[in-house]
Image (cartoon, rainbow, N blue to C red):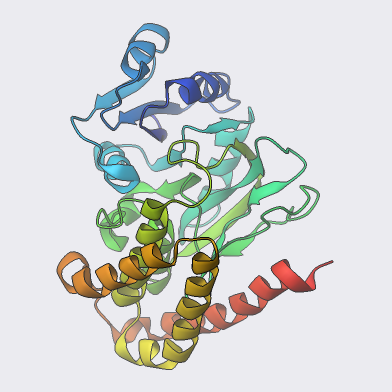
Length: 324
């Protein structure tokens, strides 16, 4: 049994797999296997995998289960100590798996380690250096569009970006799996939030470099579908993870965050889609979401998270306005 299982969700991504899979063949770390979970692709993905990559373990779904459903399949099947999730629109450096394993192995309290994601098309720029979440209810891809000469120091982050992150497999039984109600978007912040509530860490591994195209499967730019899911899932995230008192304290900031998002999306022509997503979230959260049960033993963790949410709001402002 391999120590690491690399799980790659795929939907009509044969052209992407041709770039991604070869970079996983000659890694400096050898104790790993690769598994592709195919979400009912109608392109040549199946033929490609069977004829050109017989060393890859494959699962073929009869319907599109989304990112969350596909990776959960891989995680539940995984018998490895670690599961490494990787988008199909990526290429990785030869030491990628090795550095990820080193990072997550450094402490039993680490739930996940996020890689240094570099813009595939502009390789002098960072795409993601671990994810942050703030009191306004906004996700931040730390370091996005910053020079690759920055963010070279390992550190704790709020959540790993699941597009290229390694997880301690056994801890999913304590933290919970990716929420399939999300389908896609913010599911990695959600699982990272739950891990933090339980007292586990999410860290950033700058030596594990992956080149990321970004939205190669779902498409670049805004769409009604993506904006609606973003709005809905932002409600799910808060509803599930914030106990009543925490929600009450953060309500003014969250409302401000939703208002600013609406104004932004309206300017782009997606105001209605965002409002529809918010409404859907409010209407279906109780039915679709499993709330994290509050426990007094996690009170210190909630306080630490609250402090981080406030701090991350200032980091957001610094990265977008104050840094010149």
